[in-house]
Every structure is written in structure tokens, then in C-alpha cells.
Length: 316
Image 1 (spheres, rainbow, N blue to C red):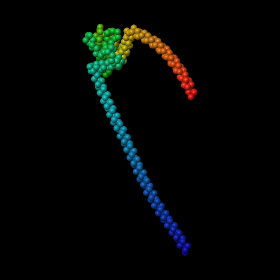
Image 2: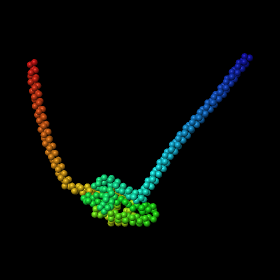
Image 3: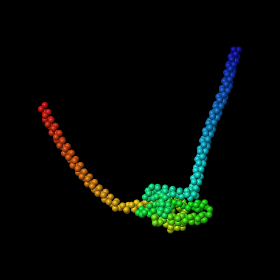
Image 4: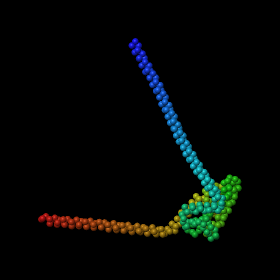
């Protein structure tokens, strides 16, 4: 009987332990599920925050790029507007005879001032001749009182029509007629007893000058026959340099005797300087010898005084 009771107690204890284990496992499972759920919720929240942050950054970047594009488009619009304004202004210059003349004169004066300096002995602007005509500019020729006249006005209308591409041959013919008339005007106005036997027709555009040289050689030859030299900005600079070189050569040759006299005087001064330097050297050497003699004498006097003083002190 006691044995049976003992077995029942053991079984009861085992059942209680099993029950406790089941309850523990159930609670643990519930706790694990709760923790996992919280972790999933936290992870979901973190993912949502990260996604929102990425979206905000992406939106900010896109907004920044949009602002940059707006600024670039605004600058492009301003540039296009400025180009249109500049083209409109240039078109007014090219089509308006007075404005075109002023532009040519301005470019001519700028070239002369840059390469010849603001020197009235080399050039002058708006120079009045004795025949009542006024040249846009003149270059003074060294060794003579004659001047070389420059005209900066250029017949542009038909050239612009040639550029449009319609009826080119007809407008080239009209352009040549205008050129020849202008050449005749320059020859009659600016070649006389007050000037040299040439005048310059300044074309303020390299492209137009190249067109004349390539497509209007007969007009170019006609200008040479009339002693009118066509120049572009580049070739005019060459004319200026040639004139400056000839001017320097003229003044150098005109003052050659004075230059030689100055060179001889400079040579004599150099000889005198050499002689005086030799005398100064000899005087300096003599002075050094005298200082040496004085030093020797002073040394002898000092030794004698020391001897005398030592002789007086010995008896004491």
C-alpha cells in the first residue's frame, strides 16, 4: 500500500512538472512571438523612416537640379537675347551708311593709336586738305611735307545682298560698280600736289577684303591703276610698320653727322676717364706707402717710450 502511494506521488510530481513545463513553454512561445512582433514592427518602422529619408533626399536633389536648370535656361535666354540685340545693332551698323562710316573711322583710329601711338608727327585724324576735302586720317611721310590719305568709308549695301545668296551675280556686278565709283572719288579727292601719289582705301573687315581679293580681282587691279591701295586691318598694320621703319631710318640718316660727333665726344670722355683713374690709382698707392711709413715711425716711437719707461722703473 505504501508502495502504491509512493508511486502515485511520483506520478503526481511528474505530472506537475510536465504541466509547469508546458505552461513555461507556452509563455515563452508567447513572449518570443511578442518580441518578434515588436522587432518586426520596429524593423518596419525603421524601413519606413529610411524610405522617407531617401525620398526626401531624392526630392531635394531633384529640386536642386530643377533650380539649376532654371538658372541655366534663364542665362541661355539672356545670352540669346543679348546675341539678338548685338546682331540687331550690327545689322543697323552695316545697313546705315553714317553708322557704318563712324564704325570704320573708329576702327581705323584704334589701329593707328595702338601701332603708331598718339603721335601727331606720324598720323592725324580728320585732316583737312587745301582742296577743301577732309580725309578720315593721314600718315605723314618722313623727309617731305606730303601726306598719305586714308579713307575708311566703304560701300557695303550690295555686299550684304551678296551674302543673302539671291541673285549673287547681279549684286556682285553692282558691288563692283560701287567700288569703282568709290575708288574714283578717293583718287580725285585725296591724290593731289599736297599728297603723295597714292591713297589708301581702308576696308574694316578681313572677310570683305578676302572677298574682294578672291572675287573682284579686276576691281583690285583698277584700284592699283588709280593709285588707290586697298587694305584690311591686318594689311594696314603692315603699312604702318613700314612707315615707322622708314621714318626711323630717315631721322637716323638725317642726324648721322651729329651721331658721329657724339660718338667721338663719348670716346674722348672715355679716354679722359681712363687717364684720371690711372692717376687716382697712383695717388692711392702713394698714400698707402705714406700710411705705412707713418705706421713704422709710430711703432718705433712707441718702442722707445716703452724702453725709457721700463728703464725708470727698474731702480724702484
